[in-house]
Image (cartoon, rainbow, N blue to C red; front, side, top):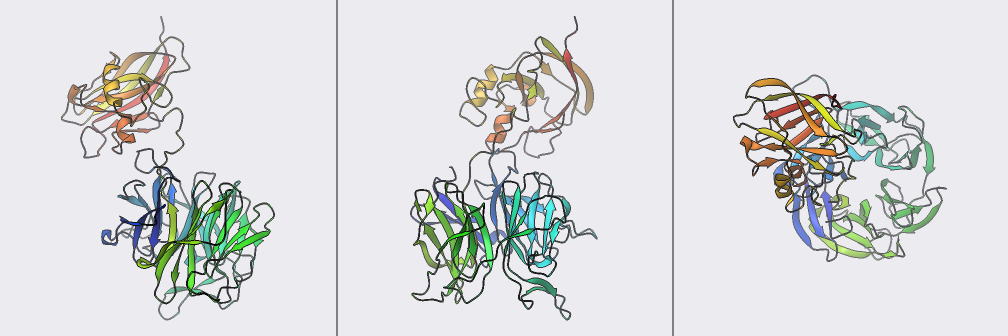
Length: 483
């Protein structure tokens, strides 16, 4: 599957589930993540991001939770919807809040620095987390209760290294009697589109746009999601109160409004609008719901020369199976940009002759595992087959080099071995010494991680207990063979 190929997801904030749809027919195919899983709590944003489970495919990141302690970012397999982990979350057994104070996360975005930025709506902050571990780093920005400030942050999108943010014009306020935190609109602040041109914490934003209310709205503005048109390069912003606004991304000029009134023949509409997403060809999807029933629908603006055109088609008519939908995204099962060389490989391309590799190896496994190597290109392919393709491990089995590494169970050894320079080499664990039972980088491509690398250490899994101590190898030095 590819992003433009066939399917999209909708997140139901009141249904606590994610629904899967066929893009061409609008047919509901079922739950991608069910409410019965008990994992989602008012899910808001659906974002495909970095691989989280080692299969080299993008995975799904979802903001969830409404209160301190339960607000989180969850990760799910981008192909199956299976739960992976809580990427950002509070550990209730500690006295600190590991999220850094996250309350009601709305949108999230990965920055050019590789870190994760999350809009914490009910603390008027944008919080920053390590993009690999999810550890809290700092408060990137926070509101000041003034026009032009971060008042009720919602949508986040990086464009040319600048962070664009939508605000709802609210101030997070604590009820003195109950302690509950709620968004107060009493200050009359505008809903705005802000831009941060620096990734330094505490940077003051500029105001990119302060739009007027939609003619179909109830007289207010509440900016929400942001996306850049993949063909025309314009910035599209959804307004919860109604309409999608198209801006010139360079000047901030409003180019046009795309009307989103799907509930009434005349203004005002009786619907609110959620997030939006594009197919790679320029088709635009958005979701919304009838304010009387919270039953939702999906609208499609078909592309015309790469630009979405008015009016919309109702791709999915109003249905209670969509329960106050906000998040929407095309299913994006495309591989991540492959890091070259592939991270599991041993790179000996800088050597002309034979190379001595010194390692420390240990094993805690009943199987008498043996490590061998095979030569690959920078992507890990062998005999023209990439990891994940049919026949890959059969090709590995017949291309294993004679060099092998063995260490006794519950022992550690220092070992030297020699490999020819000038190429890349992938490790293959012969489980219990069998060349027909291998753990290789092919497993990760098929969704079952058996080989992990951290720095100069490789760890291997021979069964499914995921202790990754069935063989651990750390390279101490690499150098040319001395005659």
